[in-house]
Length: 206
Image (tube, rainbow, N blue to C red; front, side, top):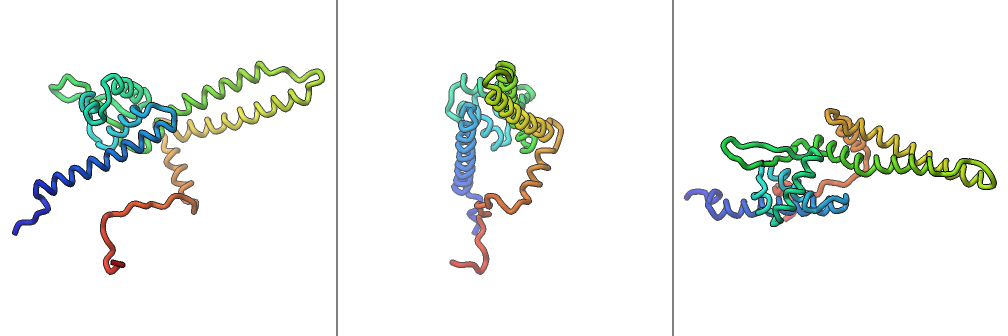
């Protein structure tokens, strides 16, 4: 009797399980994106392109995610600016296709750079402006003003140092982020892996 492992029913079941796993990843990445303050659709488009590993056109993304063309177009434009996806062409096909960066460390560096640019750099600019607006040390409020400048200087220096390190770690061609992460991972604190390989242990409990 021929093995049933390759029957159409089993193939369809495997396909359904693959799609479910992909959809769960997309949903999880979308939720994380919302926490970061970016569009959930943008995060889901990126997740779809990353987890499938295949170039997709706008129509394919719309069909898979069930979102409008306008939402896909805005999301793709932002992702291209972030540097986490790129345009690709298929010979003989006039449609534009988009493919996600598949190297996870290159992707994380791009995300880190963009978040620094959007979140930390404006804060440092604001701290500089506040420092210029703050009163000079004079008169009866001398101690209070001195404390204000001290606090501003400390937080500006702290964020400045973090930004400098982040730029070194997240440089477009550098491996600093990966190196730092691996060094920190040696510490005996962290989240244990909870996934299983799907194989049962021989001789284990029933």
